[in-house]
Amino acid sequence: MVTRFDRESDLIIIKASIWGPGGMTPASLALDTGSAHTVIAASIIDDLGYSPRHGEAITTVRTAVGKEQGYVLRISRFRTLRFTVSDFPVHVFDLPDGFGIDGLVGLSFLRQFNVELRLAEGRLLVDRIAA
Amino acid sequence: MAEEHTTTESVLSEPLTWQEICARYPDEWVALVEIDWVDEDDLDFRSARVAGHGKTRREPLDQARPLREHYDEIGHFFTGPIRVPLRTYMMP
Image (cartoon, rainbow over all chains, first blue to last red; front, top):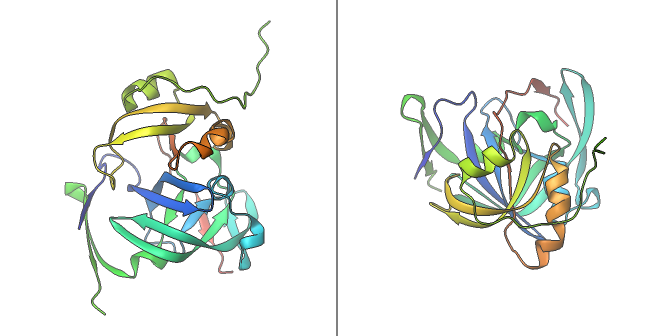
């Protein structure tokens, strides 16, 4: 499966679709192989009808300006890079507004696949790992 | 003197291209409905209607919330340049 991205951008931005009790939201996420987790902004999660009550664990992120608390939540359905997963755990945080992204796709999603990053071509090649 | 205020009222725009949305709402977050995707898995779309906009991520979502009962899909995007966040993570 091939996904294209803007090779001129500072980050690799990909489209994700996130489902919740209130519907579905397409959002822009940064591909981040340096993040163990997939992170979604709290405002998006709230708008989809989830709340911290649905969370499984408290988690903490350390940023340049301090520490912030969030939580781990299983979202009913998550799609990106042309693959859909169900009951997918994400880390929910109040991300700063100025970065222009709604979160990060980290290794928690990517490690289910073989991912080939062709930066010069602006293409991501993704194959599901055979069971 | 004009008073600056935040609106939570949802007013749908006419269908606009991404370039038109960026020109009309520069460096803002927008909530989009009736998105005519070029490809369902890419960020490219032909047109969409703006259901909310604002400087914070939450503003357009609040404005578009009344439309949730009419639209299964409400998109959320930033019209400005995307910057690199500075952060490291602590394991939970």
